[in-house]
Length: 513
Image (spheres, rainbow, N blue to C red):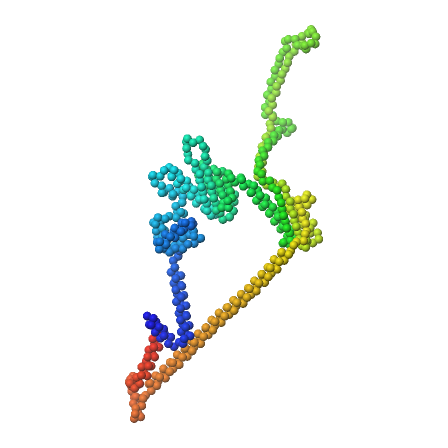
């Protein structure tokens, strides 16, 4: 086989020199490589997801099963997704399930109850139901945009008629999120979990993030001190940024330093007050709803007097009258409830240091007034201090010098890289031009040699076809037909005719190949 290919190649390149043969071989190899790459790309199967959102253990089990079943697969999404050829996806899924393995993503939830038999105890049924309910809640929570994963643990007390202990249901939720979970999202999580479990209230749901912060639950109040410090720090940072942006607009970036110290009362309180207002008419008289009166009269039939005032010589008749009046007045009653969620600033001080070299005459006073107006602080009250001092610029100068040196080095390196790229490009183009010129010259030389060989062949043919004179000096072949003339020449010069025919046959075979 190899000898046949070699013979055909030599026949096809009989008129080429070594350089032309090498060029032809390189071009042939490049074409074959391109065809192979295109065929490999065109015939490659499209991959489709077999399972997604797998845990590490599930992904390992699925890939091991596919490998044992001789299925081609790929792993993407950091090991959470397994891909198989699109044409084999249904067959692969059936084979994986037939092997006895079912990914957790498909067996979560209440499907865990499917494995319980008629001999399972009430305790097993209760635990399986509790696990299935927790897994259903986990799948619901992971549907939220900011939640990557969730772990739910439920404590559901068993109903017992003879138990006097009142144990409430509770739940703990561990959330792994992409960013910060807002209070609205925390409320949504607690509400979803509480309404999914019978007898569970939102107050008994504890939500914790992956950083160990308690977001909701009975223990969340213990972190109020830390939250207060964080909120105070945020207030200080916000005030510093606002003052710094105002000052740097005058002195320029890097020429001001601001420090703010705040004391904030974050205590929650509720105040209830009542106010009563009389209801009067147009004349200012207080209105009454009803009036009731009673009068009692008592006639004196006996002598009345004062003991020790002497003898009573005359009796006086008389009577006693008693009157009672009851009135109900109209009064408006107003009840006011004020809830204070905290955040009252009890004290705040700020210090502003300016670079003395960046200030002009009168700038310090104007900046002090502007900062006092923007922040509500006062230099007279001692809550605001603005000073102009020379800044230490040695470190900044060193950093600037180092940055300049680094930039210069990078510029030199970039310039050298550009030169190297230019030289590489020029060299590549030059080599390509030389190769192209060499190929062109070789092609022209080959054509010239082929034309020369054809001319020589024509001369040989003409020489062979020339009439041969006999010994008597007469041209005996002049009167013969061309075919008989060639036959006569073949008899007289058989070697030359055979060589000529062989060269013709070789040229024809090379052209046909």
